[in-house]
Length: 276
Image (cartoon, rainbow, N blue to C red; front, side, top):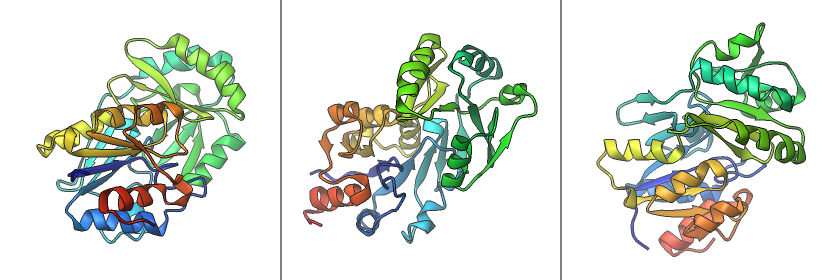
C-alpha cells in the first residue's frame, strides 16, 4: 500500500486492550514507522497532562511522539515547536446548562482541571477512574465549581451499560443544541463537548501546520470519538474489537484485537509485508 506521512492512533482499546498493556509487536511497528520518517501521534479523549507524553517512555519507544491530540481535539501538542494549543472549550453557562438538564439521570458529573479530576461527589466509579489513570480526584465544595471556568469536556459514568443506554444517552441527546453534542467513548462513559472539536479537527490542525495533506494520514481507532478522525484521514483502520460504526466506515479492520497487538500486527503485515 502507499506510504503514509502521518500515523495517528487512539490509545485505549486501540494501542492497548483492557489489560492496558502496550505489546512488543506494537512497539516494533512504531519503531519501524519512526525509522522510516513517519510522524507518529496519539489521539485521545484524555487531556495531554494525563501522561500522554509519558507513554513514549513508558512504552520504551526510544523517541517522543511527534504530536498529541487531547480532549478529543480540544488540545493539540506539536513536538517540533513544544507548543500546545487549546480550542473551542465549553463555556461556564453551557456547562451549567448541561448539568442542570442532566440532573434526572442521577449520575455524577466530572470534569478535568489541570492535574486532577473534579467531581460532584465521591463514588466507586470516580475512584476506579483515578486509579486507572494514576491521577488525583477532588470533590467540589459547591456545585458551581464545576462551571467556574471553561473546560474541554464534561463527563458522566454509569454502573451499567443498561443505565447508560436507557437513561443517560436518551436524556443527553434530547438536550443537545448547535453549541455542544454528546457521545460515548466507552459503553459506560458519556462525554459532552463543543461541536467544533473532534480528533479529526485536531489532526487537521496539526497537518495544516506542517503542510501535510490528510490523504497522507492513516488513522487507527475503535470508538465513537474516533469516527471523524477515521473519516477525515486518507486511510483508516478499526480494531476488530471496535464499535460496529467504526468498522463500517473504516478502510480496513485488524485481524487481531487491541489486547493482542492488533495495531502492530496490522502495520507490519499490510505496510511491511511481515506477519507476526
